[in-house]
Structure formats: structure tokens, C-alpha cells
Image (cartoon, rainbow, N blue to C red; front, side, top):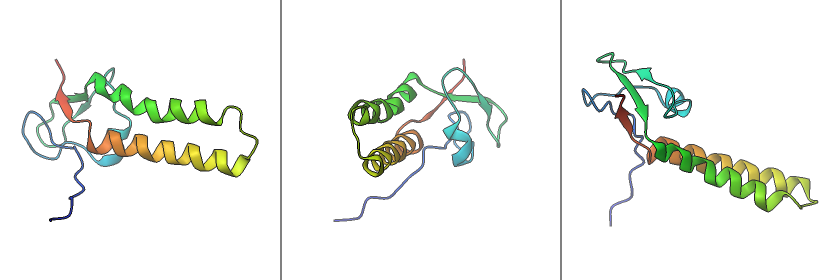
Length: 97
């Protein structure tokens, strides 16, 4: 069994080259665009980006009544890491219409 390869979804849908740096993609939402660093055409993410908010909303739901601050912080940080992972690896870049 081969190990799963960690792959960032940073490929431009226009030119199939690396379009952005990872930190630039983290700030990309369906309402804004960035230009591909290679072909200079606009790219964005689909509405699926909104699913990255689910771990954060779930964490808020679970920690709202907690009294143990270190556990609350750990749950929140885990939710943030999951949201970042989803944004970088599962949400592809799309052409901006």
C-alpha cells in the first residue's frame, strides 16, 4: 500500500501551472479573486469554500458551555487546523467568470 501524498490544490484552471502560494489561497473566497502568477488570469474558489466554516461552527457549538479553558483552546485550534487543511487540499481553484 502506497502512502497518501499530501497535495495542495493550487493549480490554475487556465494554464495548469501553480497559480498562488498557499497563504494566498487561504484568503481566497468566492467573492474575491486573485491573478494567477503564471498567466495573470483571475482565479477564485467555488462556494464549496463555505464548508471550511463547518469545523469552526462545530467547535463553537461544543465549547459554548465548557468551563475548562485549555480544552476549549485545544478544540478551537483543532477546528482551525481542519478548516485550513480543507481549504488547501480539497477546495480547487476555479476560473473567475
